[in-house]
Image 1 (cartoon, rainbow, N blue to C red):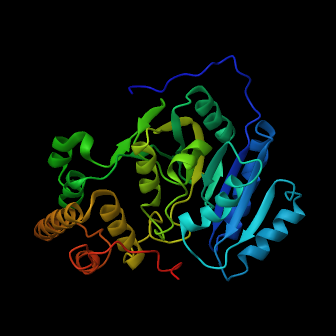
Image 2 (spheres, one colour):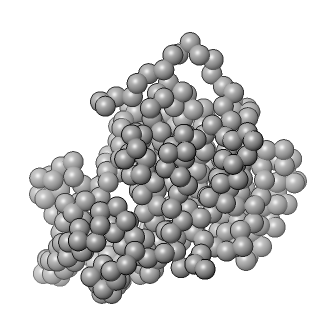
Image 3 (cartoon, one colour):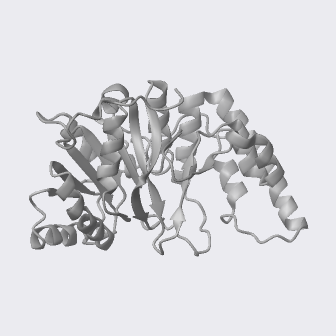
Length: 342
C-alpha cells in the first residue's frame, strides 16, 4: 500500500469514544501538566476519558495526582488507577486498557500519552481526523517537540541485522549505503507511513487490539512499542506519522536514561532483557544470536576507532561488557518481565 485508503469525508466528525492512558512513575508534576493540556482537547473530543495508572511510585505521587484531579474538577473525565506493582510501560498501560476494552462501551481509540508529554492544541483532534479519513491505518503518532520548542522530527523503521551493523560501527558511509535499512527516520511536514512510533504519543484503533491483543507486558521498558507495531503490521495494519498533531515531550523523566544534556548512564539490565526478548520473540533464536554477534563485533570496532581517533566518548559506561553479559549468546531463553513474574 503506497498510501492510506481514504474514507468518506462526508461522514460527520466527532463522537469518537477515546481512552487516554497515562502511566505515572514518580512524575506527579508532569502528569498534572499533561492533564492540564488535555482540558482543551476535550472541548473538541468531549467523549474522552483519561486513566492515570500509578505504577506503585511509593513517593506520594498518586496522592498528589488524586488531589489535583479533585481540586481542578477533573474527576468527571479523569480517573486514577493504582497498580500494585511497577510493571513497566506496557503493564501500566494494560491496567488502563484491558478493563476499558472489556466494558459494555469500549473506546473506539486508545491514546497512549507519556506523563512527560503535553498535548499542543488540536493534537488529539488531528490524530482522530487522520484515522477517520484512513480506515486501514491502525496506529498514528504525533510530531514531537522538545521542552525548548525545538522539533524532534523522527520516527522509526523496524530493526534488522543491517541496522544493528550500522548502529555498532557508527560510520556515515555505511549509513549512506544502507539507506532505508537504518532505524531512525527524519520526517518532513507531511503525513508518512513508518514502521513504528515512540509511545510518547501513539493512538491505536480498538480493532488493532482485537487483532493483536494488548501490549506485551513481558517487556519492562523499551522495545514494547516496536513489538506492538510489528504485531499490528503483520496483521495488515499500517502505522503513520501525523505532523499536524504536535506533542511536547521531555525525554527520560521516569528513567533518566535519555535526558538531554546529561552524561550517559550505564544501561540497566531491563534494557538488555527487553532487547533480547524482542529479537528472540520476533525473529527466532538463530537470528537473534547472529544479530548480537554482528553488533558486538561492530561496536568493538567502533570503540577501537574512537580511541585511535581520540573521539569523545559518548557511549553508556561499560556498554560492551554489559551487552555481552546480557546477550542472547549467554541467555538463550526469552526473558519475562522480572517485575510481574509469579
